[in-house]
View (cartoon, rainbow, N blue to C red):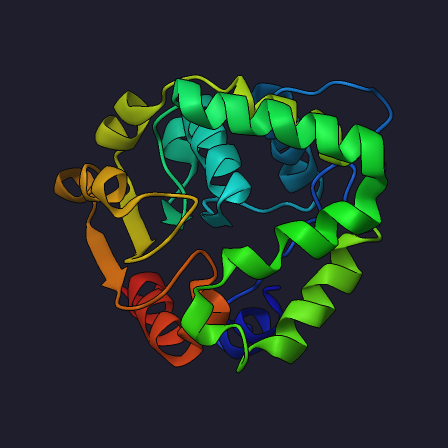
Amino acid sequence: MWNTFAERFSEDFEVFCPDLPGFGETRLEQDHISLEEVAVMLQEWMAEQQIEKPILIGHSLGGYVALAMAELMGGELKGIGLFHSTAFPDEDEKKQTRNKTITFVKKYGVDKFMDAFVPPLFSEAHRLSQEDQIAQLVSSGKRSSKKGILAFIVAMRDRKDRIDIWQHFSGKKLFIAGEIDGAIKIEASRRHQAFATHYHELEGVGHMGMFEAESECLEIVGKFLGN
């Protein structure tokens, strides 16, 4: 999902797009994992790669991981970006939705989950024009492990409130929100604005701004990285 961004920004920066455990080429050995454990894994991986003072930008779940890493590493990070994400924990209604998703994945498996899950992440107005991207994301998602998907649904459901981490993180902070994002409501996004050094709302965009508003997002991220 970050190929276009990686290609663009690798002209001026060293760019890494790691797979989280249980996704892509990275295995998840255990049945359960917390965001705190993921943060430690990535911290250790960055040390192995000799990555120092990075800027972390995470989309949705990736943003939750970025916040866990900010709590763990603090001043070792130059900046963090939340891309259609939030520092707030799940509300009760969202937790109930996560539980229903867990039941669905257990019953029907990864393929049917991806077929049902990915298209609604895009705003209805963009689904036709993004048809090829949606198909690629569905296909890529189907290569994820059932164990990994279930483990991370639980990790997201049970994650703690990190709004204090967002408020007090001393590095620069980017927040990108979709005006009609069905997963992260715009009202919740706006509660992050006062503590962001860079805050942007994407008009008419759902949960997938890197595709729905690619040019605008490339410009926003480019300015954030360059400042």
